[in-house]
Length: 449
Image (cartoon, rainbow, N blue to C red):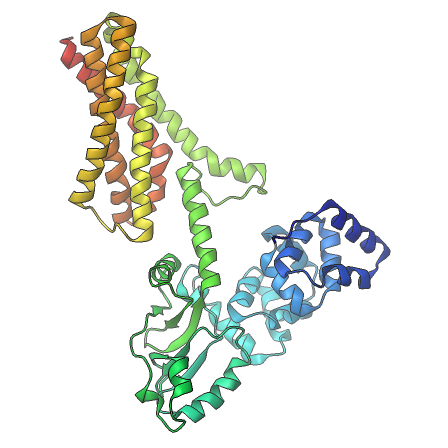
């Protein structure tokens, strides 16, 4: 059952904090998961959260740090000494510790590293800090189990026992050569069922998925998702094993990428959260609103240029909002499917087959909508030729919107621009201008105006 923060629990905690009942606080929080405690701390003010954080043991608070909201984590870290931060990092895996220490200033960062008790752990963290945070190197952890291809099974088991002490979860056993180059992986079943004198080189599995330190995080996520991997090894330019990435880190990447795409689709140009300041939220939202305003002004000029047309055929202007809404929806639907295909790898580039399918769907949808529109217009206004003109214009505009919605994301993707930007205001506003131009152009052609 999922934990929920209750008002009663918050009140109890606040009372114990005021009375400084540290034992009672520990009892209340001791059996809770670190993610649940982080949720509780987010409900308290900074002083109360910091007090509780200092009451709990480092082995628990280290994990809590990772789950806290950014502003609360930053505030708590600012109230800890370099030695106290070092104690927290000593309890974390290298990739998580590197994420925390990357948020500190250069001066504090150096002090914290010098205070760490585990020198090898500190060296590994420093090594991870040199990689881009959005690369495989920035995601990976140093904790893993590896064996040499020249060892026998008995030696392998002994060495694995030593290495496993520093690894919280053993997803895979990697095989390397004398130069630490990744050769393959070892099956636990083969290890348990093979003679202790057998060489590892005779039984390891050579086929293995891996990524380079410079591989983008979204590409790592795609590979792990495609092959259903719980972990993937990371190699450097020389093919040497330098770390591994686990599924929990990839879940965060997928979530962050989905949040980013969702915001781009809504016309939000920067990564923002609900608790950001009014200024930050405004800066993120305003650019596309201004671009949309300019494009809609252009659309108004198109309407003005066709003033004589809709003065003679007044019902043409009545259906402009319907035209804009329908074309916008068709375009967004088409672009959303393409963006989804690009994201999950089912669509990598322009495909005639897919394009034909999308146009066919739009043609069928447009035809049904246009026939209904023709029937409605004929019934309400008895202007049959105008109704035909509006209906045919609607089909043309819908096909244009589907074409735009399909091709624009592919074009952006080919030019290394996030195609998610094409699923929101870009498509709808562009459709407004060109859709209205096509609408009146086709209508005037049919009506002989």
